[in-house]
Image (tube, rainbow over all chains, first blue to last red):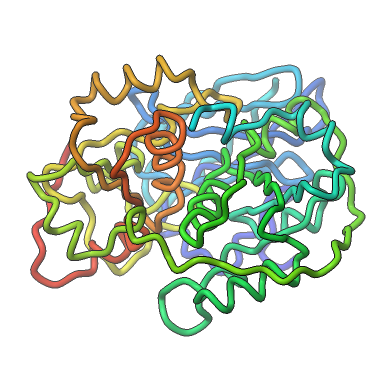
Length: 96
Length: 277
């Protein structure tokens, strides 16, 4: 797939230099799992949510700053902190 | 109107999957989600292709809505149960839209597609067919839809509830963070609007909070529920979720959804805009 990252989502058509991208995958027991990922801001307020792809991949277009990712999958959840900056793609692997 | 009249849970839906009087309808932001799988016997309405005029920015007209529902097999007396992804944003939007055209018996599946999936309930690929009907819609109910002039006139007069995330309200983001941020409109919010994100009215699994929690939420945020209220967001889908909370769950009269929302207001020439929290 053109522009795809290994196991992740295609970046085709996205001008990464103008975005603050936070993306990654969710796994359970070492295996990619489908579910949902929530993006919470520095105050812990909900900002966005995406369903993961069939391979557990997710992506957000955030703004520079501190964020928390919360993965929700059947039977579990997990939080991961991330500090993001403009023009960079921040890869986060979340194990539930 | 009470919670039991407008919300159903997954057990209720599972018990009515083969009831011809009930149409379960999936409405998603990701309009392809239905093609992957869906609740058995659920049909799809595409919020963009089916509910928006293909040229002008407006809804389909009464005749087009009648043709849509007739073709999908929804009759005037059908119980319509809406569900979708994204915590029922677009299902709430469709709920409000059905009410706009006068459909009486419409309900939301509490928690929508997310809770259904997190509970590991069955989803199928088979697309059902429903026999066509002859649906008759009402004229749009102007008491639940706000337009731009009304939003401007509401500044410092009515409750304006901005249900976007705090970072969109302050102007840090222009769109929900699962979408690219490049947009043409100015960032910020309508002056005097209170920022009560839609997410505060829902639990992590997408179900609505209790009536007591919801009442407390709006009172704590300083919304005078005795006054008229206009809710808005970016394109009117998240504010339909809050319209549902205020109008359908809490039974507040005089609550309107401004579906033009920030993509319209933030592009208007000459209107006041506030930045910051």
